Amino acid sequence: MATRPQVRPLSPHLSIWRWRVHAITSITHRITGNGMAIVGGALFTWWLVAAASGPDAYMTFLAVARGPIGVIVGIGLTWAIFQHAASGVRHLGMDTGAGLSIERSKLSATLTWIFSIPATAAFWLFVLLR
Image 1: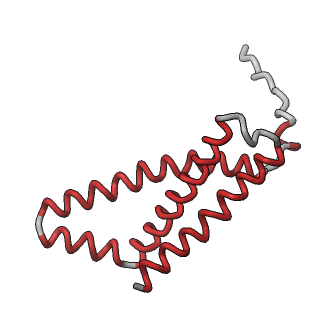
Image 2: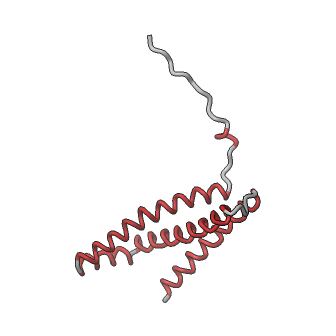
Image 3: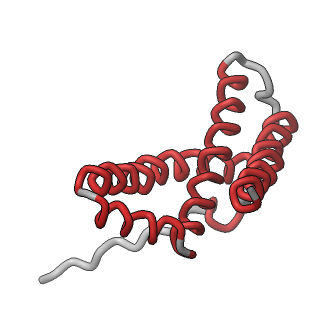
């Protein structure tokens, strides 16, 4: 005779936990680090291989990089760099014991976003308008 699997209740945290800016910033820090390593690493490798393979391969790379998809990926990677760097500075400060209160943690997390988004916009305005 087969036994029925035991039905366990769901954890109550699923109904009471809320997303907060410092949690989102911490998760984003991990995602941007991995994204830069994977996407940035793949693009850097493609660039090196294209440069070593000759003018035709390099021109193909440049055509993609300068096209709409390349610009979108470039903007995303630029934002990831600024966000990850700002979050890294935040974590460096917190590692010293500063800013560990909930209010300070929320403020420093919010400041990473206030820095990274305009910094990305300013960088790309500079690149596209020069």
